[in-house]
Structure formats: C-alpha cells, structure tokens
Image (cartoon, rainbow, N blue to C red; front, side, top):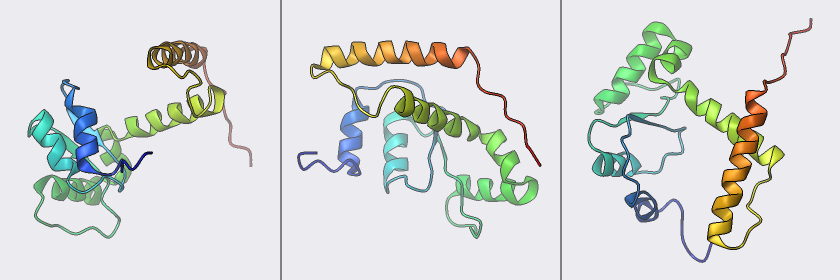
Length: 142
C-alpha cells in the first residue's frame, strides 16, 4: 500500500474528512484502533455512540458508555445488549460483504476510478436484487 498504514488515525481522518453525514453510532469489534473513538467524536460530535462489545471479563472503568454496556450485558444478557444497541446490524453488514466477495469478487476489475464507481454500482444493484429474491431456508437436522 505504498507505505500508508491504514491503522494510522490520520489516514482514517483523511478518508472521513470529506464525509459529512449524521452518525448515531459506530459499531466495531475489538479491533477499533486507539484514538478512533475520539476521532469520530471530533468529526461527528459527542453524541456518537461507540458500540464495541466488552469482553466477558470486563470490569467498570473510567468510560461511562462502556460501563453502561457492561451493566446491560450483566443484567439482561449479551443477546439483549446486541438488540438494544443495534450491534446486530454489524453482523448483517459483514454477511453482505461476505456475499459480495463470494459472488462479485474481492477486488474491482476496472483501473480507472470513474469506471470503478460504475462497476461498484452495478455490482451493488445485482447483489441487492439477488438478496431481495430471498435466502435459503435452513432447518436444524438432528
């Protein structure tokens, strides 16, 4: 990647700088880079909720939001916490990305940026159409 570290907060800042949208929350696994929460709050306001599942052995610390997540998981369970925070959407997005890679491929074929945009739009429409047709129904077999 020509010497650019994608985990560098400045790279993330440059990629997000032109994006001006309203974020209600940011869901991530444990791999959210240090400083990213502060960066998202700086760019999109302090109302952004950072949704990262705390580990099973998590204890209260200095972050009120994280403490709240720990309390909800302890009281109601992890599945309830996922529903309450919308964390389930993350897994749906990951599943769709997996479908994209399986059906479309893991990289764009066009070399020109404008052509890559058109390629991604066509692939998105095709994948959305396939998804709208339905998914296979699975049954547990004993």
